[in-house]
Length: 126
Image (cartoon, rainbow, N blue to C red; front, side, top):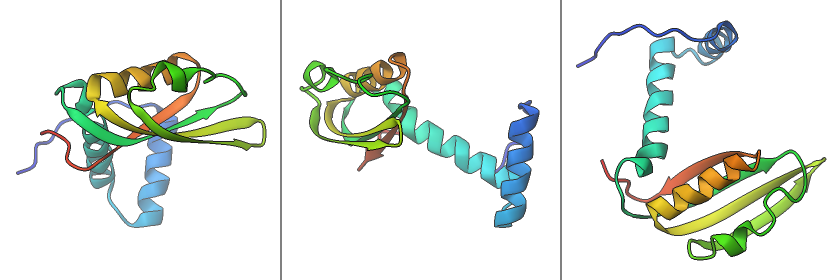
């Protein structure tokens, strides 16, 4: 069963959505549904405490923004990869442990001015 409701979004996002819909042949409702579903899956860790594992990808405009973060979150970071792309830093953190601590790592990355994306691996609680 589908539920219909309206949303308001920024004009530039609406235009990007229209372009993506035209290029992929997928209607806007389906694109928005998939985006919301992905967001909810990625952020369910904020709703249900559990043990989890996943990959946290960070993009920082300047070098050094995430210095010492591996020591601060060594309890959940099992491995990491660091690379420089142009002037920016890219980091991939492989994390395992309590969801609350992994989300703490995610929040710290955002607080330091970096973009981040957590990709859970395995089962995520409903």
